[in-house]
Amino acid sequence: MTSAVTARGLRKEYPGHTAVAGIDLDIAQGEVFALLGPNGAGKTTTVEILEGHRDRTAGEASVLGEDPGRAGRQWRSRLGIVLQTANDAAELTVAETLRHFARYYADPRDPAEVIDKVGLAEKANARVKTLSGGQRRRVDVALGIIGRPELVFLDEPTTGFDPEARRQFWTLLSDLAEEGTTILLTTHYLDEAEALADRVAVIARGRIVAEGSPQTLGGRAHAEATVTWADERGPHSERTNFPTKLIHELSAGGRELAELTVTRPSLEDVYLDLIGEQL
Image (cartoon, rainbow, N blue to C red):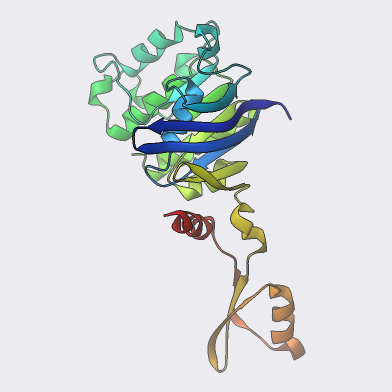
């Protein structure tokens, strides 16, 4: 595995407050990695350190083979960054904005193609100041990928998106991942992390409290299942580590089980348990 991002003992301290309390991270090239956590947990601070936008107090970091605290302009051209908030050229049209920023890169994507990918083709000639909040967010995403980056940082990228726009954005991220782009994503939407991420990490009080695939995070794959069914005596529910065995026993002799379901804890259930322990 070739790492795009490596961090060891990453810390950020302020007087009377520790924002990041010793984080270790390994993100492989081409991986989609989601960082989850409540507000104030240290997600944005961690991402800003890795982007080179904030100094760290202690620890080591390597992003695309360089220390983000000392890397130069050429290194920055290999990154795409979508911040939580961004200042835009409100008087320019969407197309003018993308064409302008494309000139900063040696091998940019075609601006018209990017505008179409983020779902703004019908707004290409509209001034940015006339767009809705969600549409402006799509402009931010477009600017983050116009330079054909090797690594994209996305900090709460779909805030303000309607459901259709979110799905369109997910397709865009999947396309970028298939091209080999590494993506570090912070989000409050757990369905987004489950749909997109190869691996996720949960951060609380500046520490990573769990890490794994969305399917295995926090022991989710091996957690007790809840089997529910109904029979002539009414509805029933039972928790078990062996749902197949239980269903076999219940249906012995050809007995019919109505409304049969088997469920395990959702990613949201596991996430809330993890941050609940910390908070």
